[in-house]
Amino acid sequence: MAERPTENQGTERGMADGRTVRGEAVQAMCALVVKGAFDASLIPTFAAQGDTLDIMWAPTTVIQDRLAEGGRPDMVLVLSGAMDTLEAEGLIHPESRVDVCRSRYGVAVKAGAPHPRIDTLEAFKSTLTGARSVAYSRAGASGIYFAGLLPRLGIADAVNARATIIPAGFTATKLVSGEADIAVQQISELMVVPGIEVVGPYPEGAQEETTFCAAILREATAPDAAQRFLSILTDPSAAEAYRSSGLEPAS
Image 1 (spheres, rainbow, N blue to C red):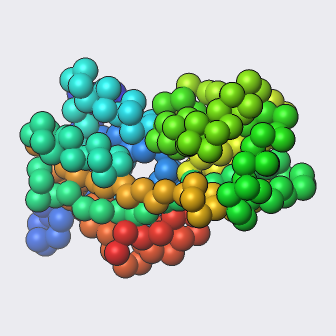
Image 2: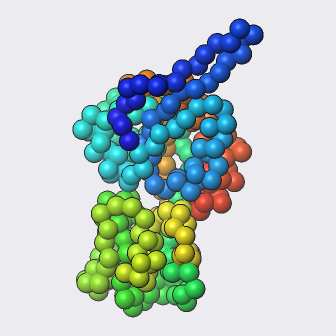
Image 3: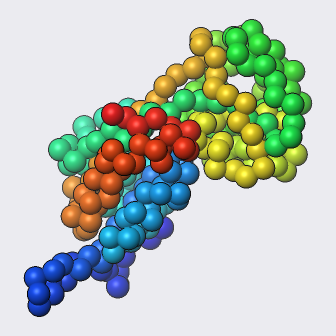
């Protein structure tokens, strides 16, 4: 994604009869967790209003790095803890900040493969240690959480000895390629990949629910259009888009 559009930047245009034609291009950096809901429903809704959205999809940690390097989109959607940091650094308009959705971690297998037991903590541990290879992401929130969970469960050595660790992106692609037989990630991120099946969420004792927030940057050049998109994200009509993609609306 370009840091900032330099030409063909849309604007709202007043018509002779008083109507307003929207046509602004919003630059965004968004966590992968919402890609399913965005692609299926929320981006088309925004486009139908006449605006466009240019998104850099990346884990929250990568988005933080880009912002630290000087990247300045119009809006960001990241983990709530990361948004706290951006607010403390003065990068966002605090009054624009909204909670968008909640997410849980889950397990997936290749479509048609047997579903292992993960309903209890012991069954979950047995499934992970018995897998040929478990795929997880090094940079994503889910991968960072999983890497920290393994030693707490006492199975870090056993799992990491055969793990398929990707730098970033969708771990379930490694199920389709045959490089792993178990993938762990945010449930909504698993669901984006065709040819896989979500077994279910982590069990109690291993699960953690995370909240994702969106906000407009202070240096945004299309703040009005960005606000229109944030309104779509928090409208009650968006709830089904989140649920259909494996998320829960924040409110």
